Length: 429
Ligand SMILES: [Zn+2]
Image (cartoon, rainbow, N blue to C red):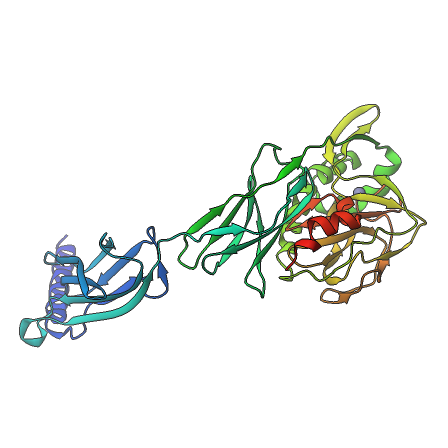
């Protein structure tokens, strides 16, 4: 017991000695940090001050000057023994948009400078901007199909750091063009509620968000229902390629259900990732090529019922067009662009994705051979690989997809010269 008491007394003496030492030998002012100290602030920007000092904080003053006027935002004395504080600074309501100069002074309780303590000062400029950018849509005739695409052209009253079309939880980024306008290619997603309203939004450097409405007409459509028969032959020949992804599954049917239900959304998340890698302007000018001499085996938006031994075991939406020809057919790039993906992508098997700018990408799936590399520029009609049946494919065919910022859209529109002219190329600056 005695030993513990002795130890405690020693600890208290040491602590006191350290305090006295600090009080007389602390020659540095309070450690001061403020955020932000550069750039723009808006109405909702949180201004935070943090102060620390070992010998204790005495007081702080935060002042802001705009033109001829100076306002005190914070003036505070701290009780003895305050070694660290956080303050939230409120901007004076009298302030206007424009440059602001901040001046901060903080003093500690050290015995230096004949008892006046040490002082830290800081000066910095921030730009106050509370006005949301004004967006005006300059394109007309936004005639959309459910599951299809649209292009909107707009200008903004000030430069935007981000903008685009938001519909439900999806966001389609717009891209600034050399002439000062913005272009945004967007989808009316096949799985969005047809009553949902797409909105244009733009964010300025200060974080103010402006919204713009635009006229559009949505053509509703019914997607067809298709049945796909799954037999043991298909399961036994196709499922081994996915076995390693689902090691806990016991039967080929279990693997199939995992692939169909779990791998599908995962593959769509990949599409979203790939879509970020896009050029800021169109890389093409002519309509897209439909792979020649092929028969359409399935269309975009088909509601597929998967039937095994007479029972419906799953339902999924088909998000491209299936085109069949001879086996190992030479596959053409549908338009000029840059290869952004060449790999095995789950249900799509060996897959090539070509970027055409503004978030528009074409996809070639189930290939038996890939003949291009990521980063390569391709011409419209260039051979990029050979068709096959890799991934979740019953036989040799090309699954052709058009994707806008990660959302698959109906490829038929892009093969239609008139649609492309009326809805895209005629609106380009
Ligand atoms: Zn397909």
